[in-house]
Amino acid sequence: MLETVIQLIYLGLRTIWRQPNTRKALLHGLSEKAYGDEHLTEIKRLPAAENSDLFDVLAYIAFALNPITREERVTTHKARIFSHYGDKQQTFLEFVLSQYIKEGVQESDPTKWPDLLELKYHVISAAAVR
Image 1 (spheres, rainbow, N blue to C red):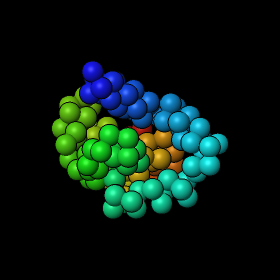
Image 2 (cartoon, one colour; image 1 turned 60 degrees about the vertical axis):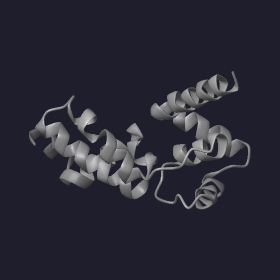
Image 3 (cartoon, rainbow, N blue to C red; image 1 turned 30 degrees about the horizontal axis):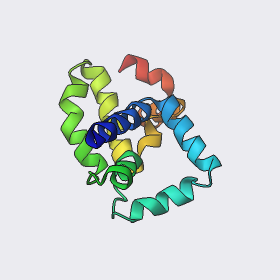
């Protein structure tokens, strides 16, 4: 019974984390409770998970699940992600995923997409012809 409850809570956290808007709301709520970026970065050092997603650190704290790195997460799911997109979109997704590996989940926030398009293609209009 307890295991079922834990699984439901974990799935709830996963559902929240998948969507940029609900993830942002969760992080905002944590910030309002004195767990801002600085504290969350410090928490990532506890399980030596600086290269992991904050989701994995939260799952580690709440459920004793070993964190995986962002690179491991991308490697595991890349084929499934790419199967939904053509070559042009995959090129951009490859770039976004590399930014995620380097910088973290904040790179997948839709408000960052124009900056990523400009970083990748130098001008947003060039992205349309690629």
